[in-house]
Length: 450
Image (cartoon, rainbow, N blue to C red):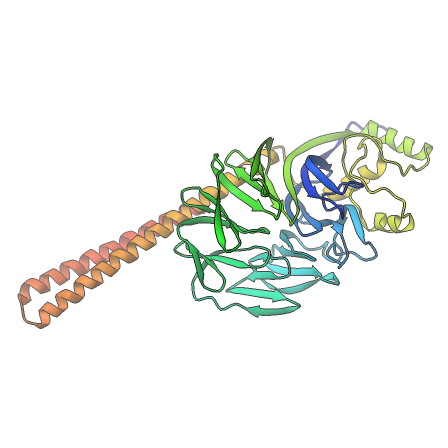
């Protein structure tokens, strides 16, 4: 029986470039990807992370997929040494992941319940580490943030002693950096680097934006400025390549060896660089499969024998489930590429249906993702304004207290007692008015933030 109903599906364009010896770019039979290359995946991807020789994806449903080298269990699966296509990380399918991070041979995730997990470094199954509000990775360590910062290295978790109040932190390959409440950047433990920092970004090299929208990255114990013209909102610096995202979500790719820059014409929603490769999230597209075409696809699947060759089509990659992982082990000659046709491959349709049956993404998804960075920047600016109000209040309060101290000293000496008493009362009233004004602005800021 034929029905007029259609199945909606979503695909995400990934753009990859760099070292691909372990298929960490998701392309088979190519050791190095010299140009930014598009790969289309049948899922909505909301976050990416690049390690040394592997990559991680988070879908709109909060599922985590991995591909590349699995030499030390960093993909979170067993019995597979290398995966070209995305593989679902085992043992965490019931968790809703909101953030991921990747190191040299390990991977991390953070759930919507602030639970942090890690796997890799010869531990395949994801292990719960601790409650955390944020996670970031260096090559061989992980930083978890809760009430303070915690270092996790060699399966040992220890709190870090930092005197300053931390507003943000980031990791490079081997170091931890943090911003204090005065927007001063420090190299852990207490090496001061630069004032007036707007934001910092993790990567093989730390990168940062100043209040004047100047871009720097940290190399060989010094900050190096990068001359990029557009207004910048995000950056990620690997060992060989760097990505800079402007306020129009256009990317600039920089070759760090010769400092050559190339402006990209596409719009990107998220960026990540590993040691020697990079991945960018591009457009998210909504499509439909008509029921009649699906029935024809079923008939074709019944009439034809299985074909392990590369299927020509839209260049999309199938999702590898637990069943297809077993099939992969049974047939080591199977070619795991990102290329197949959605209309002719029934297996892909089943994968799309399974992975998107609970997807709540509507027609405005693309615009929402496009505006995400702009909304984040607005929140950061509001926080900066509130911090400036607090700093100004503290300075004014210190001035008032200094003047009151002097006036009290004069009072003790018996000079102009009545005049000084009136002056002190006036100053106390001014101080009270100043405090009331500060809390009023604080309430307005919190209301605007909500």
